[in-house]
Amino acid sequence: MKLEEELKQTRFKDEYQKAILNIIFTGNWLEVGASHMLKQYDLSSQQYNVLRILRGSSPNPLNLLDIQERMMDKMSNATRLVEKLRQKGLLTRQQCDSNRRKVEIEITDKGLALLKELDPVIENNHQEVTMKLTKDEVNTLNNLLDKLRS
Image 1 (spheres, rainbow, N blue to C red):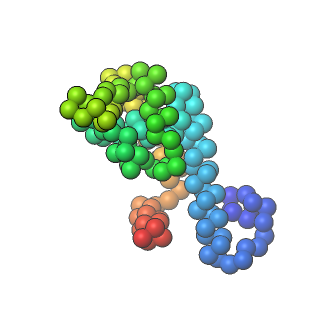
Image 2: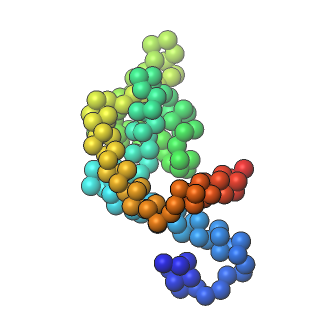
């Protein structure tokens, strides 16, 4: 559906404003879809992101700052997210023996098993969302979004 129909707005200040609103609206649309899917697994998209970050660093532990720097949503409270995931048994927090101020965070086998279960679900969702785009269109979209942030 076109942005004008979604927002019930027929005019924009200019195409630049429309593009920004389109990016924000589409990002929110993608987030709602992901959140709905992850809710079945008792995870938020931010918690899922933390687990993926930890899986990517495994077997090496990370500290909170490392996790926060790698997160897609920089405004998330990494401390709170890590604690919720620890309570679910999906990761561990250990105080470093050599530096008591440093906390090492690692994904557990239970966390890895959950991600393994989620991988095909997420992949299927990504394919459904992007199936309307050709490979060239996806490359163009990636390049334009990268250019916008540069």
